[in-house]
Length: 465
Image (cartoon, rainbow, N blue to C red; front, side, top):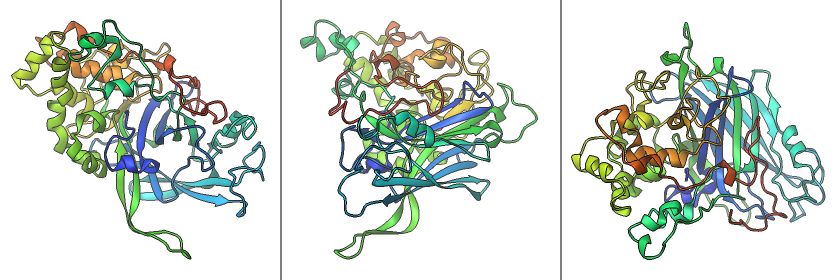
């Protein structure tokens, strides 16, 4: 979760695993949109001497659809190369790394950034450097300086960064995947009643772990299609965003003399739009297939959105708590509210002053209405909390997407499409019990927004929050 190890095959290939995606209008520059794609999840900060990095053999891409067909109109492609400075050292660094040109730094990564629009590719930058991983106070004594050196403003208007960050996603993985336990309500669980008499204390399983992030801040004029106006109700204001990772189809293992080589066309092995879509909606048998397909093919999975397995499990796991949801499930009515949230966007007229529909094509994309201004007082529950600038209108780094998703699946959003339905009282209260306050590394107020990665010296192993 959000998409960490969400499918059997990609769990074996963390370098290509799309783990989180964020898209929001930049608070300090509302004429731009910030896109952040995370990969290489669950990084132990002390994981040396071969510290984590992007894959030289992986093509990483952030896609934007601005006409609602579920296909990319604009793509930002990141391709990496790694260089070893000292061929005779086993160390990542032989002294403090105080600049990106430090001779003490032995293994460096660089990337080429390409923008593809309307089928035409333009290389925006060659050989931009990544910062090193945050090794510790002796090796990377002024890490924030290295991040500033690795943040670039391009002549084409984009701001870009690629490198290690603290994982800002908060989720109680240990509880959720132990038969759907929510620690704040564990005493109500059908099996937990025998074990727990009171509610439990949530644990952020991802706290003090790192990821690798691709962050790009883009002028709105470069992601939206041309239109006469961009009001909240205008379709041209809304973009759909997803991220992917691809590998070449053929890999030849080397021998004692030659290295491994890759050949053939690139094929997609991972993608991510809405958080938790492949994790929670798509069944195990089809997760790997879903990862290989474009959003334009997501009509194949619409049935799982209309009748999500988790909606049926909640009344079974918490008997007597979700009676109205149970009745809705038994009625066999398709969940039109979830289809709107996840596959088409929410049309105008359902929520005052809000819309983020992209049309009739059913596609899992993170939809963002760029005409909605950033909130001065963000609410972590996003649109459910009355904050129209938050999830499912894009996704900000502090949005509590697990709680939002749980409450939607529990029936809280059904009245958007069926005024006669009365959600269970629990639907507005269900939560794993975590928030951004449970992330040790604080989020940044500006680009690249995710916090400073945890260093290996101070975090020799992940600690419970």
